[in-house]
Length: 140
Image (cartoon, rainbow, N blue to C red; front, side, top):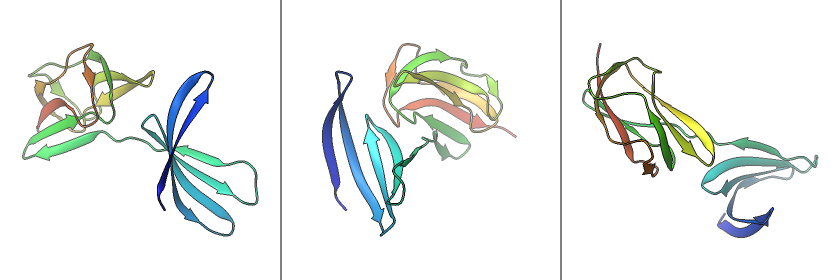
C-alpha cells in the first residue's frame, strides 16, 4: 500500500509523519509510522481500543573490509564525546563514542576486538546516517 504523509502539530511543535500500512486483516491492522526519522511499528486490533506500539531499533552499521571494520552512524546526530584514539586497543562492546540524537544519548560500541585505526569525527561535529565514525582493525 502507498505511504501517506501528514503534517501534525503537537504542543505547538510541527511534525511530519509518514504512515505505511503493512497489512490488514479482519481483526488486525499493522503499520509503520515514521516521525522525524524514527520508525514505530504499530499494530491495532479491531477487538481492542489500545494500539500496540514498538519502536524500531536502529543497529550500528558495520562494514567489514578485510580485517578493517568501518563503524558508521546509525542515525543523524551530534558527537558528544570520543573515548578512543588511533592505536588504542578495544574489546568488543567497549564504548567508542557517545552521540546525541533527538535529545537522547547513544553509546556507539565496538563490534569487534581490535585496534583503532582512525577516528573520523570530533566532539561537537554533526553527523548523518551512514557517516563513517571509526575505522577498526580486527585483532585475534
